[in-house]
Every structure is written in structure tokens, then in C-alpha cells.
Image (cartoon, rainbow, N blue to C red; front, side, top):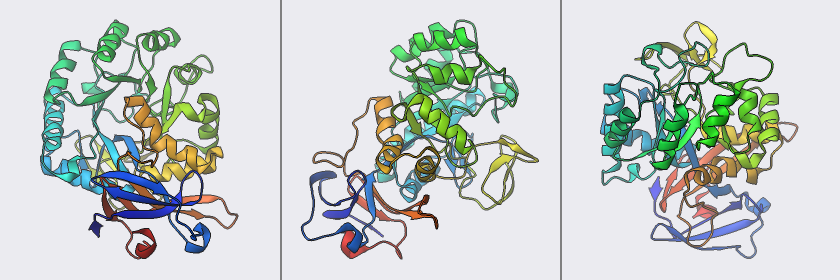
Length: 404
């Protein structure tokens, strides 16, 4: 069911108290606590600002980095974001030859220009590569033949193809003159992130001095064997000028690593991403892709086929990360939501949504499922409000009379 409700009621993600949002013209007109309504007795869904996923590579069999990407496939994936509670996201284009990158970027930019509500959720493009390490391990699943040093002229051509919509560039600062390149990219208004790197301490420090402000999926895109210290994970964890995106799907990082990274960076400097693969949403099995042979294992782990430890993106949406970071790092719901909503906005310099009057009518209604011991075990999205339009994800569990 899709509808344009005039109000929405839920259990506020910060206070735990009932809140009634009045909605008009795609914005929140008022946010009040309804009298005589007890959130426990009413069994209200939690309500929070919509999630913002900075790293999503595709969905349902379609990668954004593909010579066969179409405008309709971009819009289709945009329309599917509501089922994840996502109201803004960055389609992520990964390392490929120039022609594929140019086609992908032009296609996403063209989709953004369509008079289609499904395009509204695209906040910008994340270009992950091609200026990353060529070394096995830290390179991850990015194709070796297309990994290359930074090239300003090429990047400008790619940004032109994207109609200026590249908002994040993930690169490795291990190459000569990377610092100067980073400075120019940052000056052009693009966030530079460090990722898929073998850079040493001085190179990482120079990158941050030049304006790099994010570590892309910290702890992943790394070698199996690292020098004890120093190494590029410690260097990035220690620098307070870097925010860190984390994939907390239960496969990419062990619980203890998530806990340690959140403690080291502080929750205020961490944000959640899904890193959804184009194969996300498909059943377990082996798949031939333009990249290589990939496999979705029965437990949902997405790997290079035959190599169950070599991850190739994720299959779980960002809401799983919200629940997992609460369980792994002991965070309260309000902070976990901020890591999936406010912190990405802060990184890109966009307005944050706090469900206050004047904020965009972008919200997610969800249930927190708990184990027998009472610990949060999952987050189940029930409905998503995007620009004032409500998309019900689970009709059977969505309490329509209480919600709308």
C-alpha cells in the first residue's frame, strides 16, 4: 500500500514516548505527544528518521557499475529502498574501465533527472575506485586490471558524466602525488574517503591533511595478514579527523571488532552502511557476474565463489546494522539510528532530520525483535515515509489504525 497520510503515530526513537506527526506538502508540520495513548499498551511501532545508506552497489541482480545499467533499473532500485527503511542513498559505482564508469554515471544522472518519485531518494553518487590499491587482499573484489593511480583529468570527465553528482570518492592514498589530487577533489566539493589501501602511516596522514574525511568500510578491504603495528587500520582508527563507515551485517566484522572500533572512534565518528551487492535480494546459490563468479551462502554471506572468506559486498540492508551495532557495541537505539541517518547527512553537509516541524517527511516505522534474553536480535521495517508518501512493507504487521 502506498498512500499520502496526513498524520503518522509511532513510538519515538529517542524518548520511547508516543509521537504524532502531522504531515503536509512533504514536510512535518507538527510533532506532538497524543494524550491518553500509552506506547506499550498501543503496541506502536518505533518511528525514526529514514535511514541514509552511503554505500549501495545495486540490488536484485543489477549492479550500478555495469555497461548494461539502464535508467529504469536505477529507478527500480530506488523504489526498492523503502523496503529497507531507506529514504536517501548513494548508488555506488565501483572500479571498472572508463567506458563502464562513464556509462554508469551518465545513466544514474539521467535517472535523477526523471520526473519520478523513485529518483528522489538518490542523494548523490559514491564512486568507489578506480584509484585503489592493486594488491590482492586490500583490493577486495575490485578487478585488478582497472585499478589505477589517481588522474585529475579523468576524474573531471567522470564528474561531468555524472552531471556533478559524485558526492563521495573512495581511493587509496598510496600513489605518488595522491595528496595533491585529494586536495583538488575536496576543493571541488566531493568527500574523499580512504579505502582499499596499503598506504603507510605518512601517506594516510598526508591524505587527511589534504582533506580526506572518511574511512570506507573500516576493517574491510584489508589484507588477511597485517603488520602488528603500525598498519593502515590503526592509523585510521587513531585519527579523529576521519569518520568511519562500518558494515555491521554480522559477516564483515566480528562483534568484538565492531565494539572496539566504535569505542576507539566514538559513536559520533561512526556511520553505518549496507554495502549491498547487486546480488542482494537473490536466493542462496552461485552466480556469474561481470566481475567474477560469486556465491551467496545459506547464512547470507556473499563471497567470491569457492572462497568463503573473500567477501564481495553484503546481502543485508542497513537496518540489520542498526540492530547489530546495538547488540555488538551496547549502543542505545537513538545513537544507532543516528549512525544510519544523521551522521551520513553530517558527512555530506546535508540537513539532518530529527522528526521536528519543518523537517522532511522522511521516516521509518519498525519493530525491534528481541531474543529470549531480551537483547535486540533484529530490526523489522514495517513502513517507510518518503517525501510524505507512505510505503507499507509488511501489511500484515503494520498497525494502520494506530499509525495513520
